[in-house]
Length: 210
Image (tube, rainbow, N blue to C red; front, side):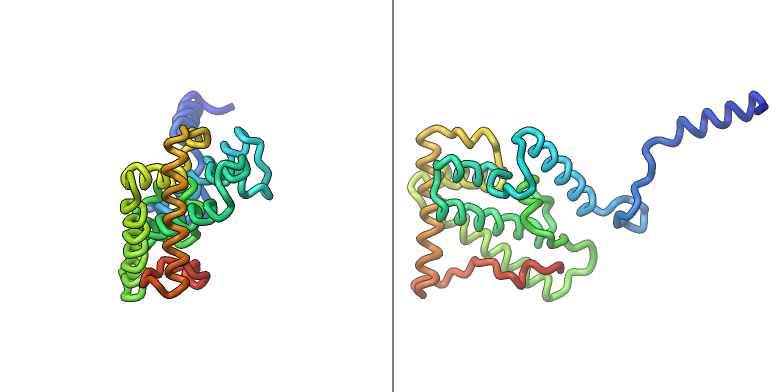
């Protein structure tokens, strides 16, 4: 039979146990979990919650975010949805490349590119500059619209922040949204016709891990 002292030591050890140490995660030399690992966990929790709330399946990608659901509702066209998706990708890449935490689970899910944890190489610095330039270009397109600040805010809050309540936005907000998305579509069409120097497409080669 264990002595009273042994039982006391066992009880103290149990009380200090806390949560079990997470395995198979990247850590800094200090032992702290790296930021992109904690972001990944937060994203997983958010996506699981969304699936429970909306009854989503793995294959129902468009129903997995507010902009996609608005397209399925018939509130916006497929072309407008694609413009919103590309805007969100540009903003998400900007956050990743300059090392700023993703502003939402939606933005976090768009890219698997890791933010840099150490030395900044010339290649990484160039990618960060390119990402910043693209972000400023698309932001400028939205701000130059009539009611620019409202247009930019509506597009950003829906496409990047993924606010669910905007699915039932008021008619005026829907007007701002479509105005902004149409401006992005027009700017891209002009660029593809060689009438603009803008180059904010994201190519498949840029999706590789830095």
